[in-house]
Image: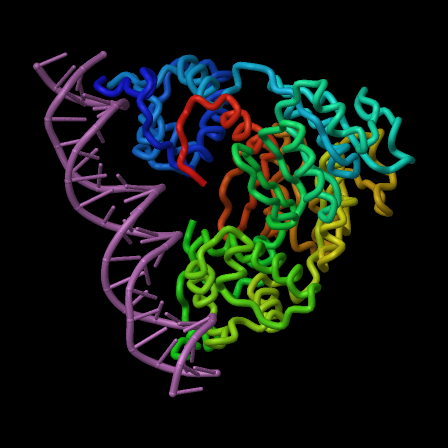
Length: 222
Length: 222
DNA sequence: TAGATTGTTAATCGATTAACAATC
DNA sequence: TAGATTGTTAATCGATTAACAATC
């Protein structure tokens, strides 16, 4: 009840770990909503995600007060709050750079449709591919990348080119004013001022699984 | 020089955070290798990855001694060691369950080829898709999943079905003896005894980028 | 009211980093 | 030898969790 600080503009620091959990909270709340539940306690939300109740309350407390003692959290209200926190209340326009396997898959990815993420452009450097229709979009020549991006108000660029090309692509994206890059390549992209880069190297997950299967090195439980 | 404990079989606990960094170390070492370098210091490896030198040394120390004072680490030797640690010294056979956008992309993913990861089977429940050839593999009927998996020695199952189907698929995979699951769906899969699940929800990265772009919530630097 | 559950404080746990003797 | 860089210890920093007064 005391802490409405964040909403009113104070600046607590949100831990990275908290940020990683919020999308999971939101997804889980959608699932609880369809069952017709109105409220949920930090206890049961935590149980459903393998987290402690205090973890949930602490995470939410960074953003202000959402719950009611005795009743827990109103699911609808909390969904609303999390969508605002995560910035999901507006549309985001995406451009995909690289129309290979991954780029194509992302162009047709249904998880984007369910939110207001819209793939608006897709680029490639391959003559055979340029001009092709992928999910309703014509693949454009990557040499026109900067020019085309300046005309369109693209929010996020997805990089799905071969690793070697990724560094140059990222440079061009940043020059064209892109401030958020979703990097599906193995490249360790340079850090740019004010540019947020999210890495999603598909191989790394397999490396972790391999490590686990090879099983000689002890690991923390859980 | 004192700590050869891990190699000789003692059991230190490897932090999760360390495990997440090792694949990045390995990839970066491959890159240094092609430049012809023989040795690398924890300082320069760290700089190239945006990490402190002590972080690198600490991480490596969990696995025994690799470096030489004054000369740093022998790149070839360290690559070798990391490949062993990560379990990359043998082949891993993969099965893909769900031949939608993502499943197809993964079936053709070149990052797997560069290691000894081999996609051996691919399943779907769609009549239109069963029997199709994807990257040289015939899509099999998902109703034969358990039966087919029991014949083949599959190490890792990739789940790329719609979220709703994921829970049942995971149950079947575990029943069929699978011990490593790479989950590309949004589903919060049940935890199974002795089964390692790696989640790769593609939407979550976009959520984080959205949060960043919406930019009202302060975050830790870096 | 009695009891459940919140938000927050303080304690604990774990991971990063500074410092430094050992050593190549 | 002198100096660079290691592996490790101890200090710091940050994140999780137990405990509990506040409160619905």
